[in-house]
Image 1 (tube, rainbow, N blue to C red):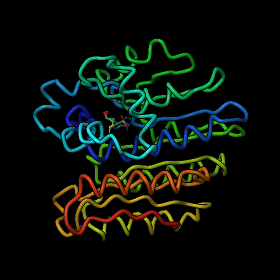
Image 2: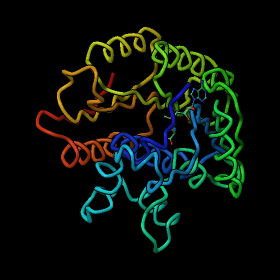
Image 3: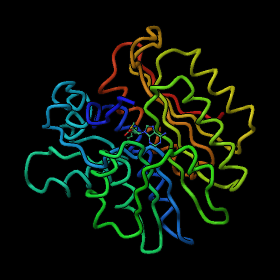
Length: 273
Ligand SMILES: C[S@@+](CC[C@H](N)C(=O)[O-])C[C@H]1O[C@@H](n2cnc3c(N)ncnc32)[C@H](O)[C@@H]1O
């Protein structure tokens, strides 16, 4: 278990994931009964883009720094930009929020967040980052297992964002999606995957189709053609029970990411499974 998100924070994939996450949260907290959010792979919550790890990969340069430099970037990024501004005040934008911080910022009084993180050091950092956030709890636990035990009968959003260090991460996403849906057919389940080669992604989608999920939206940002399986050629989010406004929001985020950060042969695709 070597993955540390600090190397990748604020990259193009975070922009797609965090723009779609905040768009879904805005709709799910606009009205209605309390929402429960389960972040299965929460990470540290707050990342220093000026720190050694982030500077070594410089992924934020071709990600959030490009976004902040573009005054005409679409409105779908406004909540993310707002949180970055709040964290950094008037200073240089060094601090970047991870998914649990973005969730915590969107919660209403009675909404809750259960953030699962397996690495104790990352969980410790996350507890510090969330200490002012009412309704947020951090547990050191396997997020797939915890999400599978989700309570029923309440609006629910499950974010699944594994590090893909293990060969069975795709299968685990499908199994967890099936388990969540058995307990709560209306749960919104948003799972992030890398896009390296088409065969791996197709096999994953076929696995999902086999469990017959309700309405499912596939959001793809391909930075370049998927012809080198050793590279991160793009990223995808597959969302079961997408809130109605997510499709146009996702399209807008992916179009911007591909146009500004992609290369020739890049493609934004948002489609129903
Ligand atoms: C991609 S990062 C999460 C980034 C975060 N979701 C965000 O958007 O800011 C994946 C995290 O999952 C943690 N992790 C790995 N396996 C896990 C598991 N089975 N359950 C919970 N956390 C896990 C890793 O330590 C890592 O911090």
